[in-house]
Amino acid sequence: MIVLLIVIVITFSLPYFQPHGILAPAYSVLGSRSTPYNVHVWASQHGLLAPYWTRLYQYIFQLVVHFNLGYSYKQELSVRTIIALFLPRTVWLALSALILTVIIAVPLGIFQASRRNTAVDYAATGTAFVLYAIPTFLLCLLAIEIFGFHTLHLPISPPEGIAPWAIFTDPTAFILPVGCLTLLSVAGISRFMRGTVLEVLVQDYVRTARAKGCSPLRVLWHHSLRNALGPIVTILGLSIPALFGGALIVEYVFNYSGLGLQTLNAALEFDVPIVLGITILVSIFTLLGNLAADVALGIIDPRLRIQGNK
Image (cartoon, rainbow, N blue to C red; front, side, top):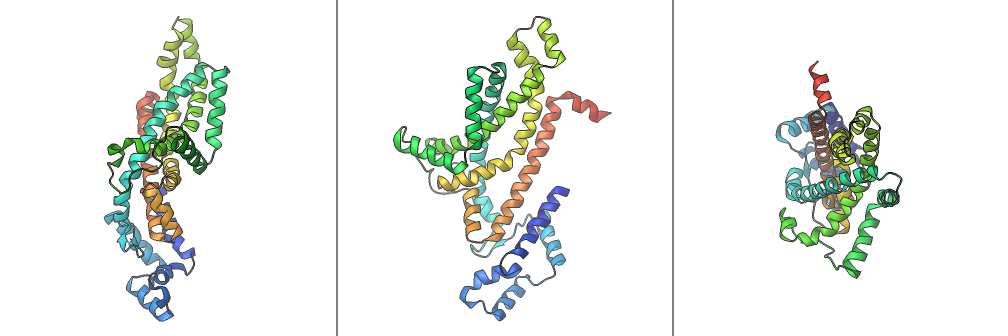
């Protein structure tokens, strides 16, 4: 709650530093009619002339009690309405990428650890470094060029509209955006998984299991995997902002009408309330992901629960 409060205060204060300060919405709405008198009247009608601390209290109260994220004067809609329209599409995109990341990255990291310092490990490590370093927009453009125009001829843009179930009606059109977002996450998660498994494999209980005659496969999956999942669960919980950040660029390149595209368009049009509202929403998701990671870590590692009960 303290972190969320700090984020709210910062996002509320940022509009004061834009051109025209807190009166920027008045100049944007009035346009050529933005005379000092008209700006003063418009700002007074919309409560922009109230003291900072009064507006901050009202903002926090409206956010906490009514989940009011502000109002977009350019689109003449509340920020909550805009987010409700486009959030489901981004959630399906990010959730699909997250599921595929877990399915691919965890076994890949375990496989690399079991084949340490072999040609397969070197090849996977090199590929992960390239994917980890490549800019998101460049990966998307290469995927469009290779798989959209020359080889598989996959659709380069998902269906238009804002229906959240579009990913189920035409899954082929989502192969490229979901694939690009997945590859960006797999590169980092697989490296972390490889490192944690290697750390676990040198522990005393693993050597004891080997000395008792356990097969390498049983040692790897039964004795090592659960203890190696702890850091990965934490990283997955904290990867939510990275998924949303990657979705912002992926949605723009593939012209996908989601929350990321709306954020970018709002930033280009100086629609500050939308940008700040989405920032708060992503912060809430990040905190919830961190909380879920802590709970899952306690389920995976019984030692944490025992320590907490003392």
